[in-house]
Image (cartoon, helix red, strand yellow):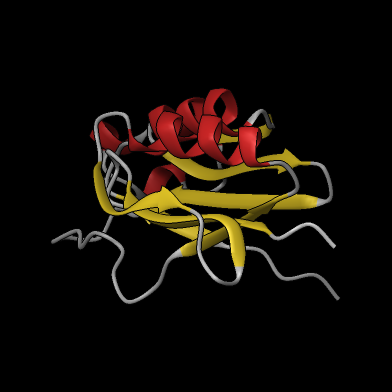
Length: 136
């Protein structure tokens, strides 16, 4: 069994996934548009270049996304994506990259449970927790 986040966007999925690919050091596997899907005739023409399914891999982890054509679009809320990294330097790099254009809710810092931990909302409205556990 695998568990991975699937994030809804209001038309910025491709931009978000390119940003995540660069920020997280992952690889985009899929960017399927609504216009190239079997549902193209059921979707307004202005949404044909929007994303029906996106996937990004980072090691064993996967992130999925979609541009949700329903109105009104609501930014994700009530959850955060937790990214646990092995090295403090990677936590700092990723935190700073994701925070670019976003909002820091808790600066990345050493805590009693982690070498580094911080919370942010990225420029696409997605909440992230970056965690680097204490060395064993």
